[in-house]
Amino acid sequence: MSRQFLRSIERLTEAAIFASRWILAPFYLGLAFSLFVLLIKFLFELVHIAQMAFTATESQVILGLLALVDLALTGSLIVIVIFSGYENFVSKIDHSRHRDWPEWMGTIDFTALKIKLLGSIVAISAIQLLKQFMSLNTVSDRDLFWLVIIHVVFVASSVLLALSDRIAASGHGPSEPTHATPAPTQSGSKKHT
Image (cartoon, rainbow, N blue to C red; front, top):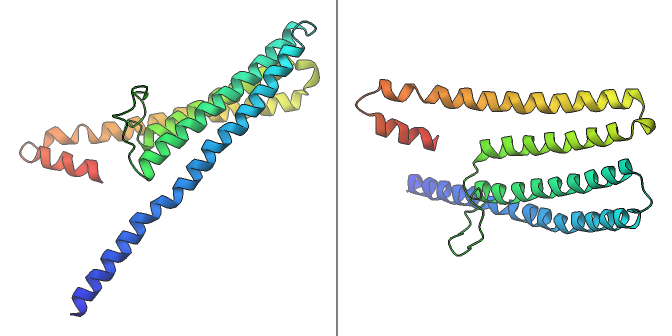
């Protein structure tokens, strides 16, 4: 009797832990709302560039356009986090009824999500660095030095993460052919771990 009681408590605990993943859903809804905030900033920058288009110098226009690209990349980064995070941690989205569903959605696992995030951060960092290079008169050498260092750290981190993921993936590959008889069962169990 007590064993059955412990099993039912264990099942309830596991069900509660499994259901707790839905606590993340409001985070992703908040990120979706933050896209509207980003859109307001994007439109503000666009109007600002349009107003100064005839009087601004070429470098000022390029700086304004780089700010727009920066905001667009940040928005794309947020979309990647929303969809892949929701699908990886909360629930699968049924995309069979959506004709415009991008191919990458639903196929990004946590490893690919990390690499895409770092790639987007590197791109945003590169644009920030380019903006500072375009306005060299207003930036001190010390600030520029630290921006370059931060960008190099982002690039090195993304390269090291991609290499470590590739090494980990190749570490699993050669071990499968050596076990000739139960290979399908072992590879199936590896996917679930």
